Image 1 (cartoon, rainbow, N blue to C red):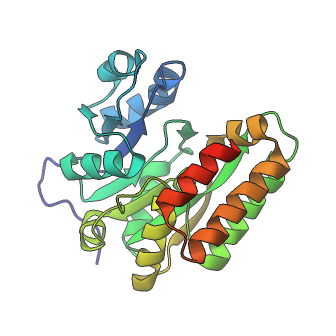
Image 2: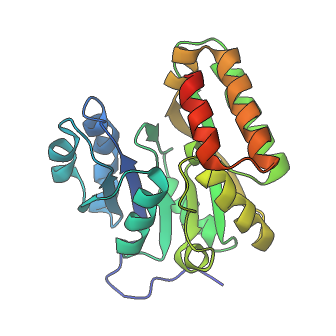
Length: 235
């Protein structure tokens, strides 16, 4: 069924961005989205308790600035609850959309209930192109998407899934697993560009090993609350 907003004045898409202490980069992240705002896309930033100047810097550049309890899943769920479009787009604060993203998402949601973009990681490590290729290939093979790849979902489907699970890690993996039972994602070849700072800071191969180990342990049934402790300890 083609995607159609419930109200005539509803925005084409609602882009929801969770934020925490992003004062150094939030204006640069939001600046490219201003043209989309003018064309009818709603931009919502949900702050999880920043201690810097993030909120003041972001407020003039968005349609809504919401304050949430900390936790990316909680922040994105609050943003979805307040969004006015029937198409929800979850964009990380350090990720940039490709040209024509609104049209690509709208077309994809006319045939799929959810989807994601390919990704290109940007940073210092010479291994980031390989990491990006591995992420894209893994996602196509498994039908599982990560938040870095900019998940987009029909509002009705998001509500039926109960939103993101209230857990501190792997909320994107868990939601993807639930969504895949309904339909495999639309895997768009267009690439979002995301920060590779995680790999630059921790080292490419140690970070790859850490993420795969955590994902394997989650698959084996270890709770996200235990895994977040291991993640922080490793970092």
